[in-house]
Length: 311
Image (tube, rainbow, N blue to C red):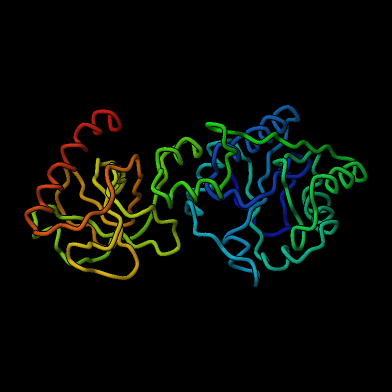
């Protein structure tokens, strides 16, 4: 898969194919349905499927539009698009300029001039152009005028609820990570850098890695059964999100993980924490011994989960 940055320098190998446009944060099951359909259509044409995407979120570029916390890293998004069969990802250098294009200009310059597409595939609520002024009706009309096909993939539902990035953010921030996983098609993962903490876990007999990822979606406070990927290996982990109320800490919730079957230091390393299910809410304990006893129980619970999730 190729990463393209310039609209005016798209190689011929990626012209005349199938295009899909979107932020695709999370690449959840709904996104996967759209991307999969684009790849399938491109294969029938003997051409490439091209994904036009934005990073950071348009809300981080344009004033007046809130930027939601990220569900995944840009690198992870590219990795998933490659796995799904995309031939190229077009990530424009001039994001602000592209976002300011009127809808008609966007379609003519991107789908027409840059890519000469034979088809576009989008979700049912696709919006494009400055202010999201363009929608499915306008795209269908422009496609007919320009001589390419357009397909809108029906929405996908899980447990009666429509799958969307907004829905996934709601579930994760509510601590309902197992439900979020059913929408994502995989556990929600929090990727960040290991930083030095207060060493309380080490003193209590449970050394943890403290992970900083300020732009990422943080699950609700509590203790989770999790999985940590680092240095190409995966470890079962008990993951705590919160303010350590037993010690009276305040500020942004800390994310820290106790890795089973690991010994060593990881300061400065990039780790990916996958949240599998919530074990319990965050609690305030009267004594450190009561806290240690509860952590012991959490670890025993995790030992059962290890047989289920880490085989």
